[in-house]
Length: 478
Image (cartoon, rainbow, N blue to C red; front, side, top):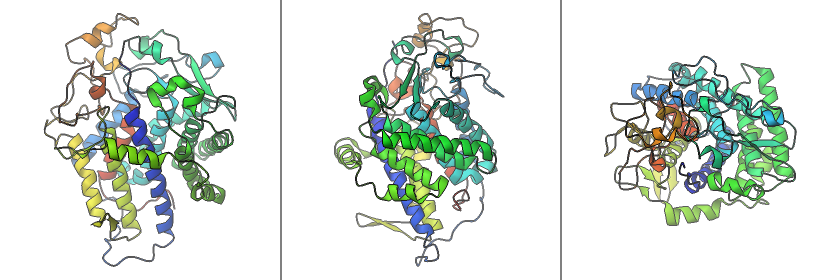
């Protein structure tokens, strides 16, 4: 049986990320209103993309490939030789086409909550750094990967108040070790609706579709309009029929638990305001005191009891399960904030009596990226395929089984237990990463450290896109 992944670390930082991002949006809106009031000593606003930093460009190209590896459905322009069509009948029991989307991690589950988060972060990355991605030929691949998810999310929302949030049974899925192309196990569907609400997952999906509508607005106006239509409907559903999906569907708590939905509603309202300009979303966003946000309680608990701040190698370290998601996400937020400071001509910010310039925030973001890419005590790149030393036993079914192997649900476990390196390289996979003491056990059975995820890919793609070159002029929000 594949070991179950813990949800505590992901959701704790996911909560912090959402609220901080919403705050960043609010700051961005505010500074745009007073851009003419530059502070003395403010750094100049960079112009178009500058010189490319090759290591980040190379890493970005590699990171983008894992999104292709995770694709479900009938693949188009497939460049991954060991991947093929899979899950073509997903959704058929409800007469829906849910064949697209992306597998969550090393398994074959489609979890709507983290998948929607992946789409939102990809959209945000493209909107902020699309010009920089284009310089290194990664903008179009990112848009293609985003659309692969949003096509799925649209189909998962067949009526106003119904959203399919999961394809597959974790118990059944994790009882098998097989290639996605060969799986024959049942793929049941899970939905939220009026009688079984799921405000956080509906709101996160609304955020994903609203942000993606901005991405495609100039290139495919009809698709952009469709995305925004679904986003509005989902926000209304999420807001009008409030209830946590962890309560409506308790079994989801084992994997992606939720401790509250106020933060996702705020996140969705922020994106809908940017996508529509409708002041009602803005007023909803700034007047959310009637919602019980779980952020303050989580903040005190996480920071007082869990966060270690910086380990010996210079990495922000919060949780031993999938440790790299936290520093990469915080680094992405830091560099976005630094660019907002440049755009608004804000010279510095104060925190506990210390002052930080945009260059300080960018330097911090680079330190976390460099750690991931090999500047660490292990001298190992935790981005698979980058550098000379990276994990060889990634906890990933497709990567661990030869493409020409014939396996069923159970006999495929021989490949999980094999002492040989993966026959297929999961290019671009960001694995869980080191423990606090800098140790890393490269073993397929060590899913805590060697399992990658699609949402990890979103944040590392965002971080690398922000660092590949310099440009802080946000074109897509103006």
